[in-house]
Length: 112
Image (cartoon, rainbow, N blue to C red; front, side):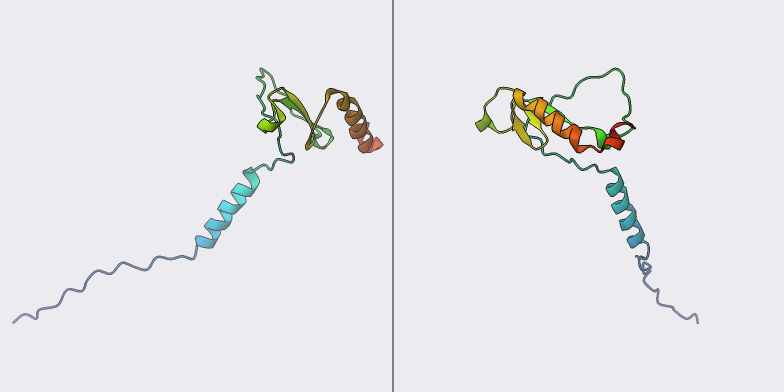
């Protein structure tokens, strides 16, 4: 007579989680490299200009931005405003602000 063997249920092998920390760190590194942080909080609505040619800036640290547009906050009206760094300003303030920004750059850095 033949022996009757019980069939064992097929068990799924345990899932190896040894590589999960590597995957998590690769994702973290990817997002840290590809994410850019905005240095200035925009107070005005911007319309990005269209360009046919672009030129890469060699020294971004010497660049200062002036934003012009309608304020995001409705309490400030709907007329276009000028944003210098983190504050709204008038047209008369722009010249003095530019002079201050130029003076804040080291003399050696300006001539490079």
